[in-house]
Length: 166
Image (tube, rainbow, N blue to C red):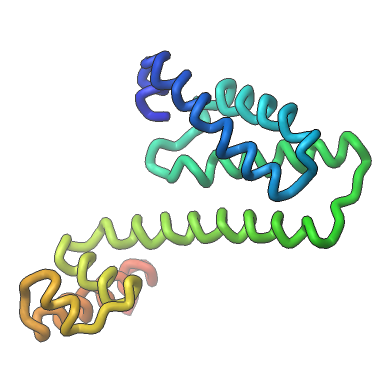
């Protein structure tokens, strides 16, 4: 996507071709096979025409699946069709995926403001679920260094989130 935005037409065309099976799978899980080709085409056109709205600092898939979900909702509205309750679960899962991606981006942005070692140790122990011992072994540092890095990093994040107030 990024090289396509930078003007590489070949990469942009390759991206659109690569998205076809991904979008087909997305729509196939949510609706009948007969309707997906039109939706895939509409989504590819939207990706192409709205590519300028893509934020390079955010995950591409969250942006893509937001477009796909809106295209599907528009399709249901045009047909004045209600979604069966079984299909609703699939849509909610997709919405949960988007929220999860956004939450992950928020965490990534917060960790970017920390020194690299503090960010790595918070990610290892608080996000990836490693123990202090495992994180220390993986990074080649002492357990106490892991604990201090996590403590200082979390303290810095709390201060930052609270707007510098303590």
